[in-house]
Length: 346
Ligand SMILES: [Zn+2]
Ligand SMILES: [Zn+2]
Image 1 (cartoon, protein in one colour):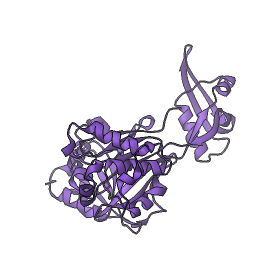
Image 2 (cartoon, helix red, strand yellow):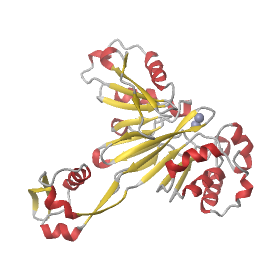
Image 3 (cartoon, rainbow, N blue to C red):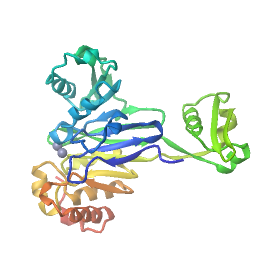
Image 4 (cartoon, rainbow, N blue to C red):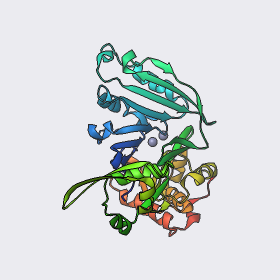
């Protein structure tokens, strides 16, 4: 069974930060950060169900208008998450335009905007194209631990790091990944197909054994259809392997406090996307700008035991020198660099 989701940076390492997480089997996607997103074609933007904004510096939020323009009149809803002040900031962006005709569009667009406070309390508002995006208050909510969003197959977690302002670092976690026992499938006389996903969902949701699953598959003999119960099919899924976990960490200072906050979020991730804005030689400058150096990013990845690390958010001052930044990250991540060179986190 292929991965539930595929993460990919929206831009090259010098471009605005952003991570597009594609759930291809579900024809939907998540987006982390909303900077320049011109590289994402409309069909990819239309797949977005949830957008998570780390903070609202321009390079992380300037793409809001691009997204709105594409989805308006074509998509029914989108959920946006952000930190303190986010609902008001979205409202201000919406107020900047004149909406005298959008209430007539046949497809109503509703933005469900959720703002997380640093105390874990959330507030929520809806903005509908039917009312010219007037703010409608929603019920306040409280986060369960650091979980921002949860579905049957995955969850999104978020924690605030310090960037001289609160900034959200994120993790996406597949809850479990059942593997298919091909010999058992053959013994039942059936083949793989989209029904496996339905079965997986039913099992993870704890559906009763008699729940019917509609099987459809194609082979050389043509199309086949049959109905089996969850109980009959349960055995074709082998034990559950740990799900895939990725993290997206950007815009933070190199401090002990930030490392402590990140620890539980990124420990053992399969892939860590992490900002690497400056070279280690410029670490005093990085500290002033509230960003990580490449070495510091690699160090955080090494401490977390990240299986792979993908650096991004390179400062334009290093144009043409991307390889140096990557090499510094890799050296610190693999433990090849002398850590005492890097200075201690204050
Ligand atoms: Zn930034
Ligand atoms: Zn920033």
